[in-house]
Structure formats: structure tokens, C-alpha cells
Picture 1 (cartoon, rainbow, N blue to C red):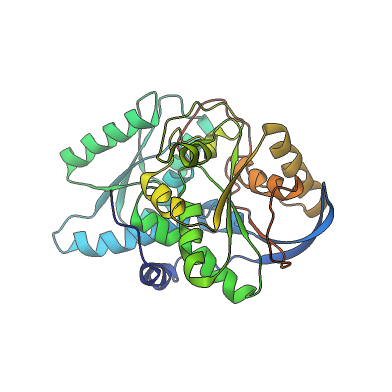
Picture 2: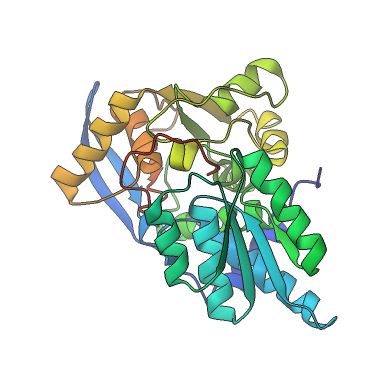
Length: 322
């Protein structure tokens, strides 16, 4: 397992990716919750390049590794991801002119395959589970001498995600807890790591049908969970990333809450009807925690909800990595 990144690495990631990613807007909003109306800050990361926060980690990894591998005359990448990480890696590789192979599950949705196809990357559709696709990607990397990218469990992914927090402290220095959806845990780990230095709480939100972080906290270590949720396309990791768990488990300012699928759908509908924000279920999960009164803090400052993506707008029944 890699050592947890430092704040210095998050700052380095910000410098590395700044030519490629957007500083997404931070919107103040007053929203209805079970406890009455509440002021909330919405971080519109669904407007990020590639449609999700994943672009931050993807560019961080690809830019850094491309510089290193170019010295050896090789600059090719491979990633196992049926979801947003694969799309983000494809966007990054295309803009930098480097080759990428994306290994997706055999049951990957036609819309995902179409998105990847438009980005011009090689797509290999094999394997029933994320573990199988990761193994296949490893074999491809070995045979083609490509560099493996991990969708969430890497220093590059976590440090890249942590740059969201650097945006936030500039946009609203006095904000309250940051609320982030949890799939593999890269986003939560990045903002939690930055929170240790910048002084805020972090709330990780998962569907009741995919509680990998919540169950890992109870067990004291990452464990496998069954996944059965409409958010499986983006929050369907059956096990929290070891790096994310290491970072969050040791941080007393990180908490875990669960929301059910009905709450996720209600939150997405609310965001669309009231603000015309079209987001995927993962973003709906984070917002649902605030609507359900699950985000508590000693601070009176408004919480920040990271609306992390807008790619998976249809309900998916198959389980994939985030």
C-alpha cells in the first residue's frame, strides 16, 4: 500500500493540473431539510472537465507519469474502469496526446462505451467484476509496457481530489463541513487529508446498498460488502480503497453517514426542480445527507456539498467501480 500523500503533494498536484482543469463554481443556496431551511454551499464539480471531479486525479497522474515515461521512450497508459475514472483518464490522455486502453466490464452500458469511443481510446470489454477487469488491465500493461492508472486507490488520485479543497478555501474561507460521496474513497480521502491542515470536518456519504466505508470503520479495516443500489454505476465499489481508509480512519474529523436510494432520487429531483442542476446519483447522495439532517457540526458555517459528477444520469443495475 502506498504511503498517504502530504499537503505538499496536494499543492504540487494543483500546480500540475491547473492548465487543464476548471475552478468550478461555488453556489450559495438555501435548501429545505427535515430540520427546516438551511444555508448550503454547492460545489459544482459536475461542471468539471470530463463531467466529474475525477479529472483532477486523472490529469495529476497522467501529466506526472507521462513526463517520467517519456524519458524512457514509452508513454502509454491502461486503466480498469467502467465509470467516471475511465472517462476522465481518456480526456486527460487525449488532450496530452498519449495512448490509453480502458478495460471495462463485459456488461458495460452502451452509453459508457459510446462516451469512451468518442474520446478515441482503445476499449477492452472483458471481465464480470472490477477485480477481474483490474487483473486484465494488469496483464495488458505487462504485455504492452504501459503504465497502470488506478481509478481511486493511488497517491495521484487522492492528491488530485484534494485540490477541490484548495478551491474551496479560496472561494469560501469560512465554510463548514465538506460533504462528499464515497465510492472507492479517493474524493473523501483527498478532502479529508486537506482538512487536517486547513481545519474543517469531512462527512462521507454512501448509499445503504453500498456501505464499504461505513462497514470498514466498524470492522477497523476494509471489508467486502454487497452492492445493491441505483448509484452502483458511480458508488459501486465493493471495498473501500486501502489508501482512503488509512487516511480517513486516523482522522477524528471524518464521519460516515448512509442514505437510501429513495433519498438519493429525491435529492436529485430537488436539485433539478429548484436549481436546474442535472447531477448523477453520487452527487444526489451527498446532497441527500444534508436534506435528511445527517450533517451535524459544531460550526454554524454552511456545509459544502460536492456535486461530484454528471455523467451517470440513468439508473444502472450492474455494479462497477467509481
